[in-house]
Image (cartoon, rainbow, N blue to C red; front, side, top):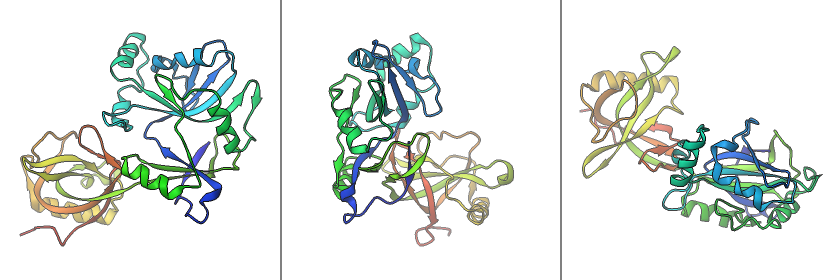
Length: 308
């Protein structure tokens, strides 16, 4: 079951909803027959059990229970927040030796938030609130690599402020009475991301492909720090055709041969420019390497731009 991107219910209507953390990870469906084994499946149905050997112990914890659980695999940073950049180092690794080594040095955590089958009975038509109670009754709160995070019933504003203050990606609101509809992006589940805006300096661009040939596919942005202009990533999402053409004209005038950034740039064949253009972008947080996470272009800031 998938969530739609939508505003969270307001305080007047939140009594009919529960609120969970929106995790920055990959979806995972867990199946166990009660014999001590476990199978992990991706959203596409692909078997991903071999990628995360540290989760095999979940089968032993559920021995004797036939169950299908829904959750998300994450890797936590030093502050205890999900970091998708760290998780990417685990994704796609299926070799037993390499997967086992990564399980020791970069362990994942499986956050469980739903259950769709238990002891041979389908729970798809059972309301969310009752399903959560059944999930809580399995005693999976204290696992070495898994947990069942709490949800807040009818406390949307508190959930929003808490996740914002602790640096999580956002919240998911789930209607208490909703059934589980596999494969459906249902309005009974609503996901809302926290977005932060930031003024950044443009230090270059990366050429687009296809119809964007000769135009910026993305712009290279930085933030001013004591040591100079620190590279903060490439932003392409949100740029309109008119904005790309306008930026191309500016970049022709401001072109330079050397990088204006104090650190390395992680794109192939970058084009550099004098760092005089300032823009506003929205983003959902910072990666562990100091780059903008999920940046989206908002607008050029002519009031802050220096072209003289």
